[in-house]
Amino acid sequence: MDGGLQLVQIKRAVFEMRDKIDRRAAAAEARMQLGSASVDSQMQEIEKEAMDMQLQDKLLAYKREMGLLPAGAEGAAAPQALPAQGETTP
Image (cartoon, rainbow, N blue to C red):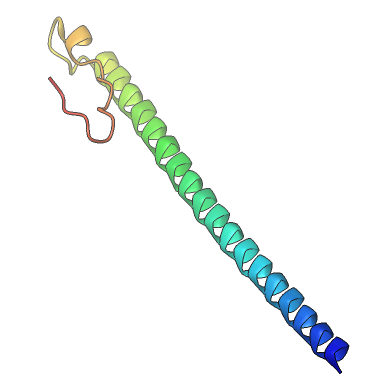
């Protein structure tokens, strides 16, 4: 009967190890998905900012064509780079 008890203990230990591995794998997958979502949202924000910059450039070009910019304003009206998150402008 001693052998049967050891077999039950071994089976229980294997089951617990398998369960622990499954939980760790699930947690790792969840972290990976969260990281992926974060990267996706950052990429969308970058694409939006790039589109905004292109639109600003087009607006300035139209204003130049229409003569709505004051003399010498072409260089001064050029769009400036946006500060990085947490960065302040001089």
